[in-house]
Length: 328
Image (cartoon, rainbow, N blue to C red; front, top):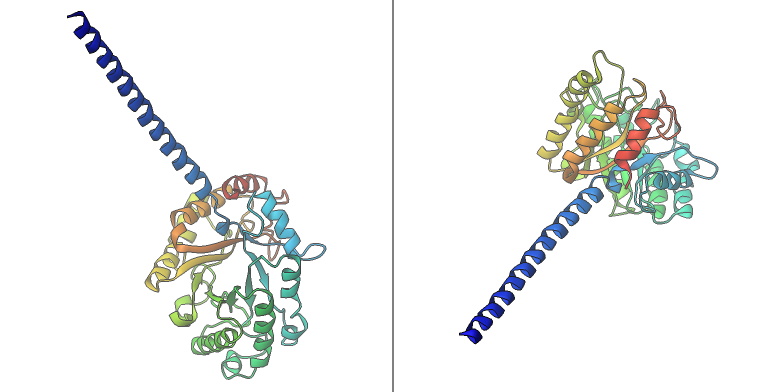
C-alpha cells in the first residue's frame, strides 16, 4: 500500500509539472503572437511607399535633399520615391535639360523617380503632339529618363482638368491621342516604365474621366490633393470637399477599382488653408485604409503657388503629426 501511494504521488507530480509546462508554453506562444502582431502593425503603419516627396533642389540636386527627408522620417535609404518635373516651358527644354535625370542617377543609382512630363507646351495644341509633330522632343525625354531610371513612373500630362498647357476641356480626344502616342514613344526606350494618369481632385474645370486615355496605357490612376481654403470646420471641409466631392477621394477609389488599377497620390499637402493637422491625419487614415490598392504617395515639400513645405517649421502642428505618422 505504501509503495502504491508513493508511485501514485509521483505520477500526479509528473502530471502536474506537465500541465504547468504546457500552460506556460501556451501563454508564451500567445504572447509571441501578440508581440509579432504589434510589430507588424508598427511596421505597416508607415510604409515607405507613402513617404515619397518632391523636395527642393538644394546645393547639388534633389537626391541629397531627399536623403535628408528619408532620415527625418527614419525610412531606409533609397526606399522612398522621388518626384521631379522634366523640362519646363519650351520644347528646347526637352533637349537642354536632358541631363537632370542623370544627376539623380549619379548621386544615387538606386533611387526610383516619378517623372512629371508635360504633354505639350504653351502655344502648341495637343493635336500637334497627337499627330507626331513633337516626337523628337519626347524621344529625348524618354531616352534620358530610361538611361537613368529605367523603372521610372511617368506622370504624363498631369492635372489635365485644370488650366494647364495641356488642358483637355473641349479637346479630350486630342489629349487622349497625344497621351497614347507619347506612351508609345516611351515604351520603345524602356519596357519597365509605369504610366500614371493624374487629374487634380474635385470637379475643377472639367470632368476628369472624359480625358481617360485607356487601360492599356495607364498603370496607376493618380490624384493630386491639397488642403485648400473652403468654408466650414476642418471636419466639414474634409467630408464635403475631399472625401465626397465630385472627383474627390471616393470617386478616385471607385474609378480606379472599376479600371482595375492601383491609386497614387503624386502630389498632396497642407498650406493653402494654413496649419491643419486634421488634414494630415485624414490623409494618412485614407492611405492606410486603402493601402493595398495604393501604389505610392508623395508629399509636395516645396513652396509653390502657396506654402506647402512641411519640414521647415512653418506649420508646426502639421509637421509634428506628419513626422509621427509617416516615419518608420
